[in-house]
Amino acid sequence: MRAVRYHGRGDVRLEEIPEPSLRPGAVRIAPAWTGICGTDLHLFQDGPLPPSPTAERPHPLSGETLPVVLGHEFSGVVLELGEGVEGLSVGEGVVVEPLLVCGACPSCRDGRYNGCDSMGFVGISGGGGGLAEQVVVDRRWVHPVGDLPLDEAALIEPLAVAVHAVRRAGVRAGDVVLVGGAGPIGLLVAAVARGLGATTVVSEVSAARKETALRTGAADVVLDPTQDDVPARVATMTDGRGADVAFVCAGVQPVLDAMVEAVRARGVVQVVAEFGARPAVDLSRVVLRELDVRGAIGYAGDHPTAIALVRDGKVDLRPFISARIEAADVVEQGYRVLVEQRDTVVKVLVRL
Image 1 (cartoon, rainbow, N blue to C red):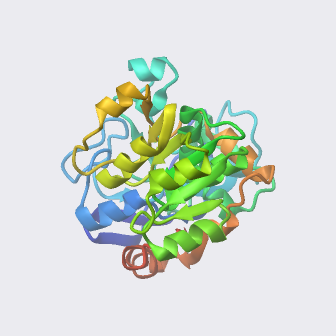
Image 2: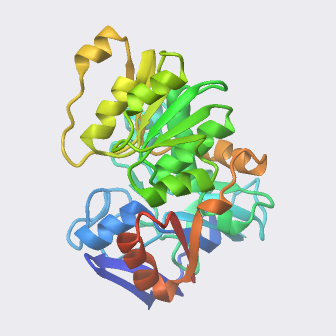
């Protein structure tokens, strides 16, 4: 079968590989659409980083070394059910929660498997991926999507990241939510919060991303921190109270500082972004304002909620799809476009 495989920095190839074997308790899926994620771009530009294996070091759960099949944000159609699989039918549209977890560490035993000590991802760490004609995944990770179009369904994985972050933050209807950074995850966080009945304020420097935040319906209000005093503007909007929840969706110090300053007393600062360097936190303000500073990574049991939000019309994923391309063009029309036009492109979908 054909598959797009990652061989190392700058080396992605469309090639022929053997079909995966179906095992008991697993599902054979024909991927339909696969989204390109920021992690894919980092791998392409910078080379392997954990949880990605290298040519010499296998991933501890998949046992695979490079090359590996790419694609962890994908939808597809069920082709075949392994022995003992229930609750799915051949021909059904599905999405995959693309995790590899050990099941034995404390986080896994507590149901917080997104904190697995050895966590990896299908499509990054081995175990196949969405950029192949077939993939075999254990039943526990396969979620039916009903009549949801499969191109939109390919965005369920990043939407689940946003759902998890919004859940961690405890957002409720009527809250004022401030989102720092309007990249793909920031936009989806704002969309989920707005879908739950919150008022969303997005802070972003890029003119193109500000326009996208409004065009996609993710933001009620957009501010530019180079022109607006974001904490002061939010205070004015809330009669001096501040935002109920502030999301750090860009891993840079000024965004973190603004979110900590803009949130109300006993509010929540939810950190979603990863930082390239260790950030500083104004702990005096955290203490004096009794702020909750929380982290969020990935998802754990959040895919069904993400699917329901879309199917119920509370989140519209269509405006977030920027382009649909063929696998043979994944480098030139996918990776390179996302690198060179990152401010104007949200999500590029790929199919074989």
